[in-house]
Length: 90
Image 1 (tube, rainbow, N blue to C red):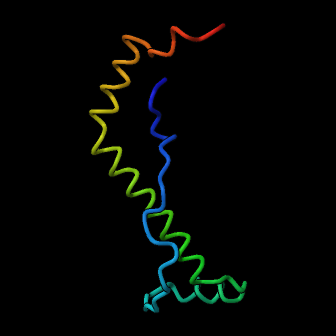
Image 2: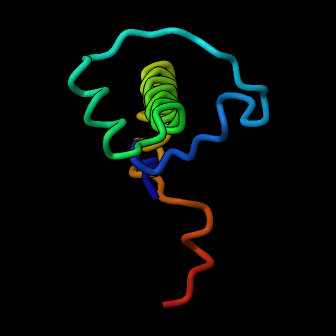
């Protein structure tokens, strides 16, 4: 069993029930016009994109911080196998 980077499960990194807060931002005017014409919910779209970016950035940071430990564990398992291997039935 190896620890695979793509299988790291992240829990919520922010309070999903926190109140909404109005904010100002700048966006390409043509993109905004097209999105409004398509009735895209800008707040929901931005929130989803930000949540994904926060998750990705946090994941990358966690993997970088824990890279040595992950590699050490993977090497240990590769060399010695898992304790549970002796209990497996084929």
